[in-house]
Image 1 (cartoon, rainbow, N blue to C red):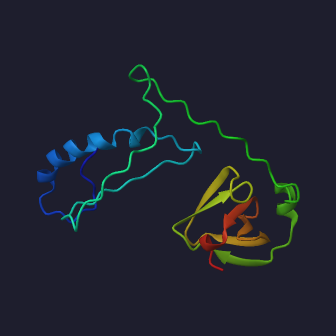
Image 2 (image 1 turned 90 degrees about the horizontal axis):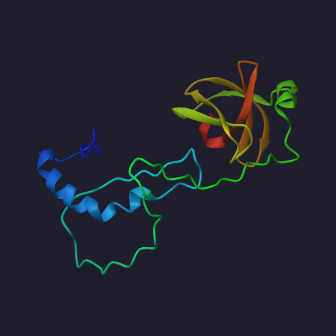
Image 3 (image 1 turned 180 degrees about the vertical axis):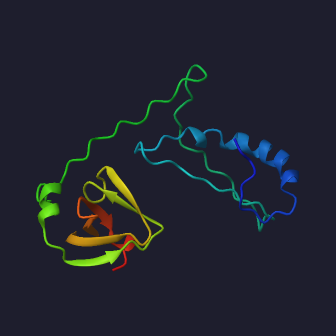
Length: 161
């Protein structure tokens, strides 16, 4: 476990390591929380600073899955139901043949492209400024084509619209 991150405003970071080591025992249960989706993970940050006002009494936490019985045994991921494609969505082959509605570029640092909107498996990550064609739209999700041979769905904010 790395205790020192790259981003910090603390002048003498090493002096906080004993404090963090003592406090992290309270968070051991948090590290065992399993994500409901195998491709997602939890990310936590810690902020140290002076306490302000009275500290409220802590509420008891909900039970957390226990650690594996033997060290080194991985915790089984939570079962995930397979994504079922929307019946009215065009297939990848149909998307490749559809005319482009407009052309744009990826606005985010990387746009995640999925097989189907929202919960489909990830098929690509397109870097910023990649030229794409918009070929269909379903709510906040756009069907995009790039390099004339690849198609998928990405969220509207990821592309320069």
